[in-house]
Length: 63
View 1 (cartoon, rainbow, N blue to C red):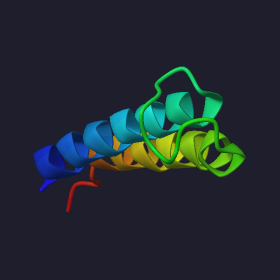
View 2: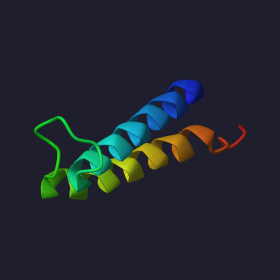
View 3: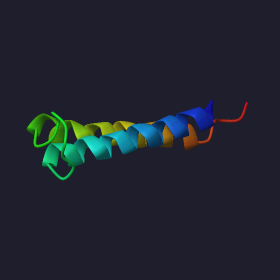
């Protein structure tokens, strides 16, 4: 389960980077290019991806 969260977090974070770059117009060729919405949502998605990675990597309390 931990590995799945880490991998999912990395994928979500990378998607956030792509969305952010499209929003800023660095990556062109889609309806998202140059859109303020994706320039704002991209970093939010990156934070969600980082949170998933951190949650997947943190140690569980021993029983």
